[in-house]
Length: 94
Length: 484
Image: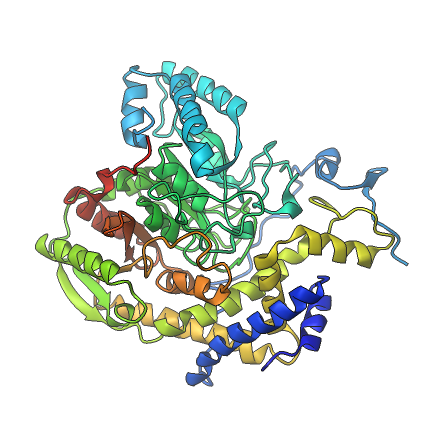
């Protein structure tokens, strides 16, 4: 087995997910099955192969630095679960 | 009237035989009749449709009818529609009302087209059966016990059930083409970058592409004409001139070379699919094309590499759903970290969590080179396979999916089996080339079978021409599902 349950717990923390005990067990077995399948990539020698991160040539796209219209503050806040004084409000951070 | 295609309805609107408002009313009634069985729609936007139709009628009266003016369309619920909820079939976006339109929505509205509603999908487009929707299960109009395909299952089912004239979907690993095949309609994934992704909720940003799902190939060309083009708001959109795709509606493949990859036939394939696709290749051969066996030696590695790349990109893209700026927030949290954890754990469904976990794992410290970098190198090999193959042929033909639509629930317990249903479509996204799925026959059980035609980068015209030639010389696209 590649992935132990402790590793699943660690990855869940990184991904900001809280898993139930049942989910931890399920994901441990499913991730192992999927990662086993992915082992087949190691049949290929890719030492000299450049990776492709994007299929179209990716150069930075620039535009003139000029003022353009943007979302008004009210529209940007419209979907906020909680807001106050023109800001997003969140629970205590520290 | 609901059976009409875009081009047929356009002629009747222009000839003043019907009004756009009448068309909207007929389609809305059709939705009321068939959608309780199919459940293709998550939201039906009756008022907006009528309003859009009335505006279209004014435009038609003024003699300014564009090809989409007055055409009632459906759109997958992962494309932003201003003022209309866009849920991605996820609890985490259940109440999200975008303050802006996606670029393609803007283009369609500018032409006077309008939307009947938003269609069901796998949550965040993650799935191949639409069963991962948090809200409802969509059924295949050809057999209500089978899946419509996914993730754009709602859009494909709506087109097949005549619950819209045409629809838009999105395709990251086959999510337009596989449901189009399952539902017996036409679906195209354009070249990566051909259609703006601005306003499309991101899943795998280097793979996602929006495209048409239609009743015939001519409609596919018309809809592609409306949505293709460079967009300054999408830095990955291609800045090249767009041809008139309708000019490619030519019935001729004489002298063309059709490539058939030997790797795509055989293992895991339903014999009926193999038979129908083989017959379709013979049809093209009979019309003057030369068939050539080609090699895509790394095709068998595409699914493994894809599920590393798309989950890695998804884990990063979906980090934005934190309950702060929009979407669902779990109530009652006392501090920020707890709020993140509760919100994301309640807000995402099982498949989305699984992919976030997998993507986070393959990107995490110590595993990046072994998985993400390795997969990206294999992606280069897959891309080069296509480049070499296209030196020897004009288009490549494969089945769209290895089997006809499977039964609801059949693959829900085994994610890997579900992933393998995209085995023929995934390498197309990995290399960025365009491909179309068109109906090429039916199984003995009466389920549609899809033929995939793949073209070179930015050569959508060629696959439209091949697809149109096949369609106009066969009658598979004229068959109707057994719905009243």
